[in-house]
Image (cartoon, rainbow, N blue to C red):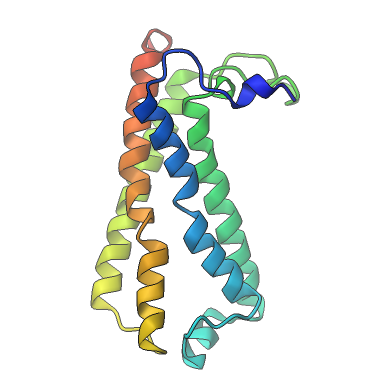
Length: 172
């Protein structure tokens, strides 16, 4: 694979690079927590909480899927600043080497920004009104590990806006 595929395209300012990379990283803490739960680390949660998650058990599959899926989707934000967000990588069947539709990217990324902003707001709302059984420190651990998700939507919106401005001629 060409190493230039991991470099930003010309014209991307530092704030957009930083924002896109931050989006790709905000899921890591909560994802590691989910993976830990999936393998049976209780992280101070009461048995009733673990039972409701059905972990370890079938719920572990869901936790692993959610951790991997969330990180993969967040990683796509890098496409808004790198060459593979403008031209499909050559190794992809059928579309390799063809231009990426800027309009579709902006629409999907905008919807993602709205969805992740709502998700972040939902996290704040449920965290501060909900009660979690277990050790008192477990509640704060969850808050600390999930708090970065609040940044996902706004940062993705900012990078999407920049992508739209940068590729504006392709949107008409």
